[in-house]
Length: 152
Ligand code: CO
Image 1: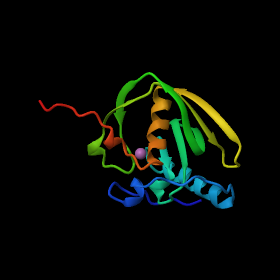
Image 2: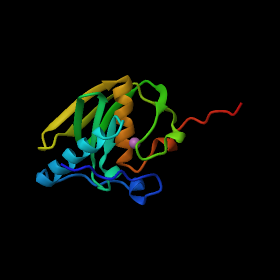
Image 3: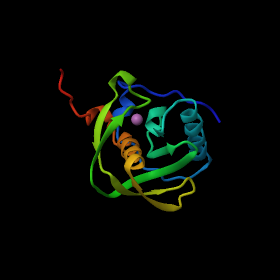
Image 4: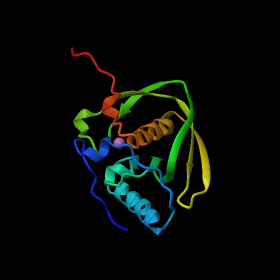
């Protein structure tokens, strides 16, 4: 395993649409293992492959410490409700952390590293993390959706 560099806002790869994974091989497994190791060297709760310079539809989420889910080709198939909460990103300076409106409940379909189909229904914080990470696969950063707060 290896720790990978995390690309920062301004790098073009963070703004591209990532490609679907079609081959579930050792190279993919290496990528996912490296993403997990990289996440664990930071205080993040999720990481998307474009953040480590790989333009593929792969994310990992760890909404609760030690509870990692690997998602290949994730698609949010339904969502409902809304919640406003604070977000940050390992690719964005923490001075830009801010509030984002997200669904409060969603179902995501994805594949594991072996290509097995999976689905997860998530609420609240976990739903937020899934939205944030899957947005990365479409070149969207949370700062694009940040709620503008009035100056006082
Ligand atoms: Co992020």
